[in-house]
Structure formats: C-alpha cells, structure tokens
Amino acid sequence: MDGKLNAVMIGAGGITPVWLDALAERSDVFISGIVELVPEKAEQRIREYSLNARCFGSLSEALQTCRPDIVFDCSLPSAHCRNAVEALSFGCHVLSEKPVAETSADVRRIIAAAEKAGRIHAVMQNRRYLSGICAYRNAVCGGDIGQLTTLNADFYIGAHFGGFRDVMRHVLLVDMAIHTFDQARFISGCNPVSVYCREWNPPGSWYRGEASAIAIFEMTGGVVFCYRGSWCAEGCSTPWECDWRAVGTQGSVCWTRDGVRGEKVVRTGSFFSEMEPFVREPCRIGPEWHAGCIDEFINCVKRGGVPQTVCTDNILSFSMVEAAVKSAESGMKEVIAEL
Image (tube, rainbow, N blue to C red):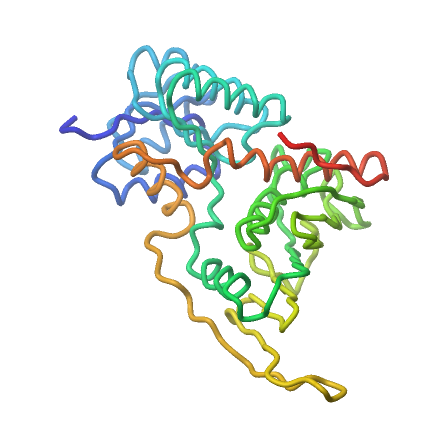
C-alpha cells in the first residue's frame, strides 16, 4: 500500500488504544489485521480507529492472509514467546509489550529466533522515551554529582485494573517493575549483579498476589539501586515513571513531578558542605512514551540499525525481574547470572 509497512496487531485490550493513537499519527504504517480471541473487541478497535483491517482468531491465519512486515504484540505476557517465535519465523519484525516473556529461557528462544530470521525483536520500554529521563540521565552521569554511588526509585500507585492483573502472583514485580528496572539501567549506565527482594501483599490490597516490594540491587561499578513500590497504595501517588534520587560523591539529584533538581558540592571543610543548586531542563528528543518507542522501532526497520529496547539488551532488565522474584520466594540474595 504505497510503500507503507504492513502491520498486524495481536490483541485488542485496554493497552491497545495507546498503540493505535501513536500509529494514527504515522503515514508509513497501516494495520491490516487484528488477532483477538474475542472478535467484538477487535471490531470495536477497527471502528474506533477507522482501520481497513480484518479480525483473525489466530496469529497463523493473520500471517498467512495479511503477509505483514511487522507484528505488534499486545497479548498477555504468557503468549509473548510463542507469538514472537512464530512471527519472526514468518519473516516479520516484532515490537512487543513488556515484559518480553515469562522466563529468561523464553527470552533466549526469542533472541535465537530473531537472529536466525535476521529480524528485529524489541520491547515496549516507553519510559526511555521521555524528555525528563534524558535530562535526569545527563545530570546523573554528566559529572554534576561526581561518581554515582546510589540510585533510589519509589513507585506508589493504587491501580484498580481488574482482569488478569488481579490474580497474578507477583503482579508488581512481573507486570510493572520491569519499567523501573529498565529505567535504572538507562539512567545509571550500569547492569545488575545481584539482588535481595522482600515482597508482600498488604492488608486492604485488592490483588490476589504480592502487590508491594522492596528490592536492593548491586549494580556494576559498585552502584546500589534500591526499588520501593506498591500497586495498592491509595493516596499521595508517585508518577508512573517513579520518584528518583541519585547520590554521587559530589552531590545528589532528584527527578520528581517538579522536574530534575539537584545540589552539588562547591566547598567542603565545615560540618555541612556548601552546596550549589542546579536544575536541568527537559531534553527535546522527539516523540515520547509509546510513540517514541514505536518511532525508533519503525525507523530501524526501514533504515537499519538497532533499537535501544532490542531483546538482546532488554534481557538484562528482564533478568532483574526474574532474580527479584526468585529472591522474594527464597528469602535469599540472588546473583544475577550473565545472560
């Protein structure tokens, strides 16, 4: 269709409008099919977005009929590996909702399938595509606070989703913390070494599984990253991208709703060092959130290159989730093997 990339979307659930809103702004991609077990959901999306698309009950049928260049996978995490391997084997590039899969073994299957097919498989880590996070990373790693020693993230939101999340065992760690863990790697430039995690489900929680967690990661370079989070915390909510504090040898810098603000040492010798405040303005980086991730993915499909959320990198963020879950279950510190 006029040189446009042909795409099939798997799923028509609650997350898909965010994808379809971003895709509606593009003139280089069209949706030819939606794979959905509940046809009414797919038909609703087709009407809402005036798509010239068909509804299919299976990915195999959609691939054979539509012959897409791209598959956007918005299915449940339990289906991600199966969908990715099938789409990649058919010759499609794949952009998947997080998490990339349910186990590191499944992630390795996806990586192998992508390498064999010579196609891109990337993951929707939309926090990387924010003007605020780029300003914060520049402040953390740009010398303002000296050498980074400690990175803390707080996530407290009372989210009443309903549906599959309400019955997931490790709902916060598996479904949400992947974003924060990936942010920590992006902000610090460090990778995980080990983790100790405590997980629980507080009184009053509407989740069946553990909706709160604290995880302490040792990162490369000796950096310590501490995550504190809850998905059943009513009131005083943090942003979805968390409240952040980074401590360095020469100062500290925070990223909150109020922006990126820090203090750096200008003189020592007294009981308290003399500090100089600084502010970092948001960096203009192009499309943000889902639109930013989709934009980079499509540009790499069209022109070559590797998206920063490619599965071979994202497995390191996923390993943080997997190790945190193992630590929460064992009560012991878990060493994160090189994957």
